[in-house]
Image (cartoon, rainbow, N blue to C red):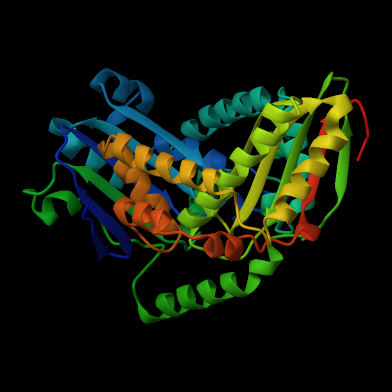
Length: 414
């Protein structure tokens, strides 16, 4: 599907024509938990909540109530390297949705009362998250896998609750923090917009005061980008520790992480899909000691692999050693052809089964844009179908001496 990228008033605007009766509008701020410190951990999450309510037409009701009565879906999420907002509704509501999204990001209506209300909302959300014992495992993993201060505290909900409670921030301080982010802001509009003049969409796109397109700012952005590339090695600790969290359960939860070099991520996903299938065959079908295993590729802020599996306490060593053994084996040996064929068939199946809704396309384009290159789904499928044994072996270059393992259970076995 064709898309058009515009650079307007200091913003990136991506238009995706889609013959669909729905409109999906996304706003993405390229700043997330990795841009925080220990002292302000959680501030992006708070700003996310505040901005969703920062629209004057909502009046005395909340903006979530306003959109509920309009029949429009609205939400926002905070990630490691960006904050994402969206509205999704029928095409007849496009103008009011555009007004909302541009206004809350470009010229948010910030009230002190909103700050107090959303602080309580964030606090309740953090308390819910903190009740899940598995989040303690994620927190320990983050603190030992990442060297970036913000990433280390991404799941430290105790700290974020403490920061939230001690905050004496006024809305003016929140506004100052937001205006000084100096990060790219991306808008995506997807739906039946072919016949709409660009000016109709961009009426509310006032000049970005925090991201002016003058030579000085462009130079700062270029320097920032170069520094980010140089500092890639400062994101990870490259540790190969094995850390046990004592927890009285009959099963053990594993979380393993491996930093990897930049790659064509759709090909790496295909490679990991095969590894996942091989490990499932070995651990579930043959050895009968797990229920399932999940291997994921995280591309932001930089490429790394995460492995999650739950196992009976008595099998923890067996499972860990099998995972390492399989990864090491296929760094030099080709994958079994049957698993390659199965992965390729599933790739085609997924391509033909995909429903190209406005929501799906907006998410797809945003993800590719954030990863540096927008590639069509058809090209990705064709690339994967052409992959040979040697292509997979080239991707298996991860250094397992940099594999960090955290596990939570009753038995310290590794």
